[in-house]
Amino acid sequence: METIARYGSPGIRERWLKPLLEGEIRSAFAMTEPEVASSDATNIATRIERDGDHYVINGHKWWISGAADPRCKVFITMGKSDPEAPKHSQQSMIVVPSDTPGIRIVRPLNVFGYDDAPHGHVEMYFENVRVPASNMLLGEGRGFEIARAASARDASTTACA
Image 1: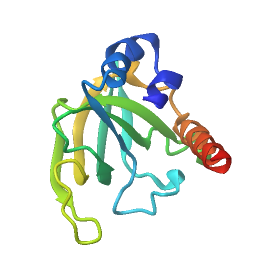
Image 2 (image 1 turned 90 degrees about the vertical axis):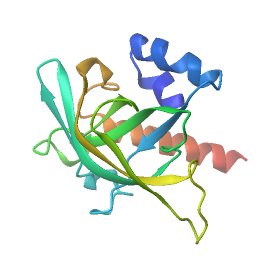
Image 3 (image 1 turned 180 degrees about the vertical axis):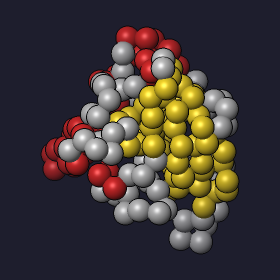
């Protein structure tokens, strides 16, 4: 919710923030990938490519918390939009409704041997997922900036607790 509140356009905030705040729906953050050390956001391999008035997303994600929850209606998805840009300007974050064609949940993942489906973590694919260009958060190439700001807020909250 905080990412949408801080970085979403007025249209994105209007569409997603109120139902999230009221607990009617849930969201998931799709960043982690099995093929790369994706805890470092500069390694993200999922592609977000501009195609006219849309972006097309292709990638393999896993450990996506809450993605299989039936209440999960939107993903904030991190991917590489410009592999030729400076290292910390290659990534973007985009809002993807969970009912968008091309999203495929493969399986729930066990955590420490426990199955917490459907509310836990999943492996999933984005396969030619098309979303309007207006779903981009903050602007193309600013995903790492958003991730760093969220990490800094989390660290300062933890330090003060």
